[in-house]
Length: 159
Image (cartoon, rainbow, N blue to C red; front, side, top):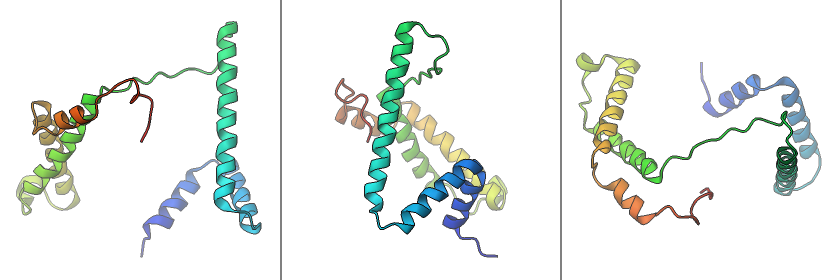
């Protein structure tokens, strides 16, 4: 049995999707396929519609909040991690990769055989990398933090 990753993954996601949304998306794609419209232009137009809808929804939520409406959509506040924490996690990942390459290849008696042994070895490398980065690390986080200071202009921008 041959498994192709991309089509199988796409089909699994499609099977897990809501059937109504699946039929609507399929109909939209079929309509685009049958017409000679530019796909990129159509996607940009759809993005514009989604942004306009989101702006309308946020304006409605603001007006409801000002009027004292109680039944508005719940607001979820996500606390952004400190910039130093993000860089420390990145350094931990780099150290994990270093440690994992330094661990012995033939260590079945320690970690086990097959996939389970690989998982245990990877978990050990992950924990060692995290502990090494928790202290002073090797300086990657410090250099990144110095090169990219978090200021008012840097916050709120992605990518």
